[in-house]
Amino acid sequence: MPEQAERIRIAPPGDKKIIGVAFALFALLHAAPFLFTRIPPLVDLLGHMGRYAVQVNIGSSPQLQKNWSFHWAPVANMGFDVLIQLLSPFMGVERASWLLAALLAPFTIWGLGRVSHAVHGRLSPFLVLAAPFTMAFPFQMGFVKYCLSCALALHLFASWVDADKSGWGLGKRLLVFVPGSLAVWFCHAYGWGILAVMAGGYELVRVAQAPEGRRLAAARDHLCRLAAISIPALLLLFWRSGSNGVETKHFFDFALKFLSVAELLRDQIEPVDLISIGVALGVLLFILAGRQIRLNMELAVPAALLFLCELLLPFKLLGVRLRGPAVVADYFHGRAAGPGPRFDRPRGDTPDRDRRRAAGRDASWAHVGGLRAI
Image (cartoon, rainbow, N blue to C red; front, side, top):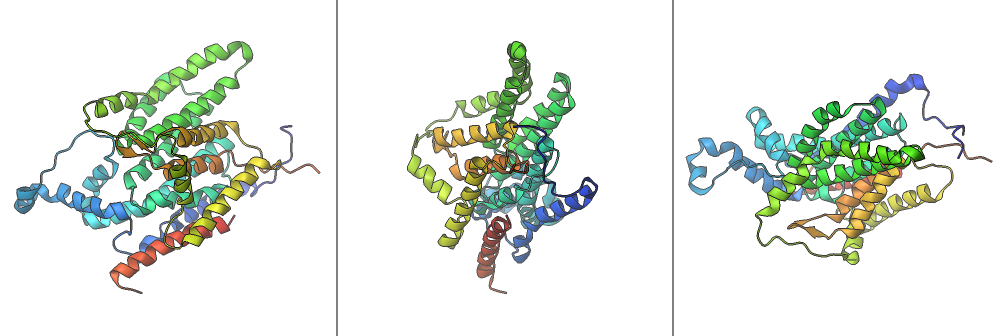
């Protein structure tokens, strides 16, 4: 397609500050449901908060020491634990958990925006489609470490693209991406896996874009770049090498995977949940089938690889559910923040329990409202 195609601009270049402020407000809006509840209505987080209370207070509580013990260990799912340890002296476990959970979705949306800007040079309008999936079923279920690792992976991937555009050398890449990839891995191993797939897909496209006579040398150079985020692979082998009875099952269980997709925006009203995911899938099909929008291969390939992982990987891997919905959500992240679009002009008041439930509904309607805003 001709690169000279006329584009429809979302706003004039002079309005970048306005767009930035609007985007920041849009991201922060996704923390609004937490204003209606003291304890976040995120299922697993409630159990985590009990562990955080032991973690923070056991050193000064003889009562806790009689029944519990707590020891730090370098494992690949400790992101929230470290942050709670840092924040709890100032605000306590409950408020620290509330604050971190409330900021998860805005932080993820910021990462999506950074990816979009790194690749397209501007914010894609299809961020509106990606944003509701930052509060999808994995978030509602309280898988906060996983969600944090995915958000960090998006930020690090945006920096990866910026590094390529700016011509960073290998030394500078190692200085930034070795500790960055370790931080993602320590938050949750699967977040690092998603980062590796996105970075690998991006580098694959860059190799394909090299002149035909230099592709072998380009492949070697780009493979060396990926070494900067490869150390967690060794840590993963070490972490799981002594595990016994670890299950890996549900290979090619496509019925289970299909159910995972259908439950992506699951909350309490099934018709609304299904309509929401239907609208999202419909827009995605429109993007893929229409001629008015061109996909950027630097993000389309990573998105396709994430979708391939959703199809081929088992539902339960190394004793942990892969959470198909979360993987598909990142697939949508890639589709909406990235391939999305250039927009080329075509030619031619309640008790505590009820209040928590109400906040959950508010979060769900935030999803639907975001989708309807497309």
